[in-house]
Each structure stands twice: as structure tokens, then as C-alpha cells.
Amino acid sequence: GENVEQHPSTLSVQEGDSAVIKCTYSDSASNYFPWYKQELGKGPQLIIDIRSNVGEKKDQRIAVTLNKTAKHFSLHITETQPEDSAVYFCAATPRDYKLSFGAGTTVTVRA
Amino acid sequence: DVKVTQSSRYLVKRTGEKVFLECVQDMDHENMFWYRQDPGLGLRLIYFSYDVKMKEKGDIPEGYSVSREKKERFSLILESASTNQTSMYLCASISGSGNTIYFGEGSWLTVV
Image 1 (cartoon, rainbow over the protein chains, first blue to last red):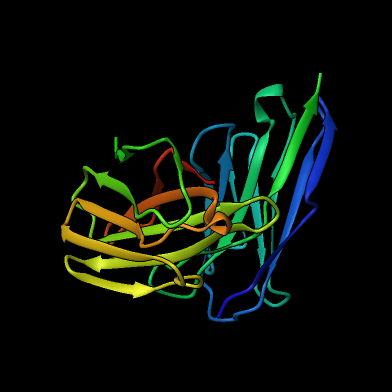
Image 2 (cartoon, rainbow over the protein chains, first blue to last red):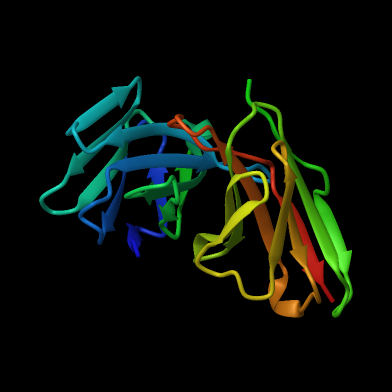
């Protein structure tokens, strides 16, 4: 099955700086790559996703890039704010919506 | 807005007890999932269901079973709870033609 590795496990950034989280996947058939943000005491919420026919996608301060050849994808958060502090999960799936998740990255934005 | 509701947010159960975790979604989604979330391990799929009365094992089904008698409701059952099942459980749903998986708020289970 699909195996997703996520790095780093923790990330501390100064407010206003950028944060980058990287994920690699193993199944070349994977074609859908969502990113989730989980705040304390809540379930994960989708923040951005990308499909295999696209190399990059942006939504305001958040962007995701995908390199299918290298089988990795990354989340970029620019101009970080305290409310960006959360746990972020990447995921990948080749079919049937059975997502395989990374282990998560705890992002702390220092004021 | 899609809503996935997990009725029990915090539970404490004794070893050997039978535990039911209930999940209801209000968007007529075909596919529903149960995940388990543990620190450093991310989310791991326990079971999923793609239709009423249909179920399929995920990556870690041992010690769990599920029930989907109605489209909107997907239940996770721990037949005999053990301490290693202490965790946060997340329910999710997605339509058959949809792109986005919606998660519930999670159920924190402690087995003592």
C-alpha cells in the first residue's frame, strides 16, 4: 500500500516568516494529495489539495507543489501568523479515497 | 456545510468492556471512514464503508468491527476494549463523486 513520510515532525517559525513541510510517497499511482490542518481538540480540516495533473496550486498564503517524478509534495505557508500554529498532515491516495497520512508536523509560530 | 458528528467526545472505559463509537453525517455521502490518531503515527485507517451494509478493512482492523445499517450512520465497535486502544478516533465521510473528505471532531477514548 501507499506509504507517506512527512518532515519535519516539529517546526518553529518567527511570525511573518515562511514555513515549509515536505512529504514523500511511495505509490506512483497516487493522484490526489490533500493537506489538513488540525487545531487542538478538533478534527482535521482540509486547507488545500492538489491532483497529479497539476504542479502547483495557491490559495492566498498557502501553496502546494507536487513533483511526480520524485514522488514528493510540499506545503508552503508564507507570512505566517499565530493562528497558523497547528498540526499539519499530508496525505496521498491512488484510489477509493483511502487516504494514507503522514505522521504530522506540529507548527508553532512565535510572536 | 457538511457536518460529521461524533456523539461521544470523551469516554473512559474499563478493559474488557464493549465500546460503541457513533458517527453521523448529514450530506448523504456514500463513503465513511474510521481512523485512529496517535502521536507520531498520524492517522491510520481502521475500517471504511462505501455503502450501506458494505465494509472493508483498513490498515489496522484488529480488535475493531463496524456497522453501517443506514447511510448516514457508521459505528465503530470495540468488542473487548484493551488499554492499547486508548486513542483519539476520527470519523470521516466523502461523497462517491466528491473530492473532499470531511472529518468529525474526534472521540477521545481512554481504556483503564
